[in-house]
Length: 563
Image (cartoon, rainbow, N blue to C red; front, top):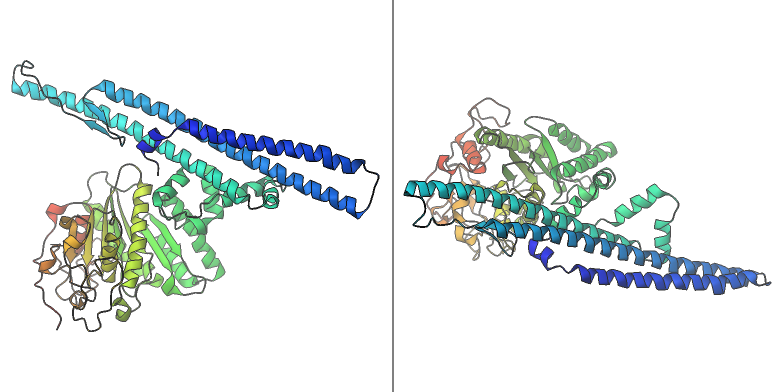
């Protein structure tokens, strides 16, 4: 990801010097090729001698010329990439300076070093308008006009910086392509000059996929946005398993790619029933539905498959809820129970959202869940899952664009431990709210697996036991636990966030047990019923849509140690 200050610091002339260097290399190699042809190959052709030795010498000279020619073309490619990059960034810098000039001339607007436009409200002089009311009216009118201009200029800057990011991604892709096609001169010749133009393009596009694609969602988003629509569609159609699960790519691209993978598995018999059930579920209401993660191991192990499905498009949503299920959840549970819960959340939140506001709810199962309560007493899966969730959320934010969505992470059971572990990673989980439902505790404060608590006797010394141990604002940590939810009393991973001493906002419930939090008044979970949602479900929807004043609250539990 390129930022405003990066663009303005860049010196195009230094990149042109780099380009001139490669131009010199190309010239040297071309001259050498001409000399080999003139002094060696032609000389061999003129000789009267015949036989294997002359044939071998002629062949070797020809091979050497191919290497020189390939090296010259490589140098030309590097020269052209550097020159194009310098020219494009210089043009963007020129346009940014024009915007900066407009900001300076507007008055009461300030362009900061990071590229944001700040409005400074002027004070009305004493000898100005006759009355205070008139002064305030004039001031407000000026303020609105200047603020509107400031927002317009800020938008121009953001668009130009986005273009610079695309140029940067294109430059990196061109350099990577040259490097990967140049493992040897023979490989370069094979790839670039095999006589089949379509095959040449396909090979180049495969080689241009960054090795670290997906590790940095913002860079992945920039790489994708720098591709032409034709190239994007090619990757969806031909490299769908490499790009479908890449955090930072647009939702529609991920969905299209992963549906290719899903159909492959159905056709090849890989977990056919579960894959077909998932495909059928993607066409159900409420919708539309998007397959954001699909990783189905070829060994037929349903427990190791990873899936994430969104109801509603997160790239367009004003409010996004990311629901993380817990112990015992695998691919076979997604088409029924898990998407029913996700659908119920979407329907309740959509009913509450403001006019013209869009909602997306995501069922995220891109981690290995414990199969039973024995496995659920371990922190390691939550820590690993937390790292993956953190990257996924960063990807959702990166693909959403300039206007951020209000994002809520909701973790049920062991999923609440995963959510908390995501928040203690590095710079925290990039969400606005966190809802912890039927939690067995949130795991180690350090974000790394701790010792197993063999008898649940509070042997943990560094678990998350207070909202201050999390990086998210404590006022946006919400806990929900039904009075008869037995799991929430076990405290496998530390204190229950619904306990009084934890400090979370306690949400009211009117459902029973560990699994009823998404039911309607009739005890059903689907999102397609006309029945009234339970208060447990409504409270989750209120947090997702940011309607904090409307939530109903429960009194925090007393801290009761397990004997």
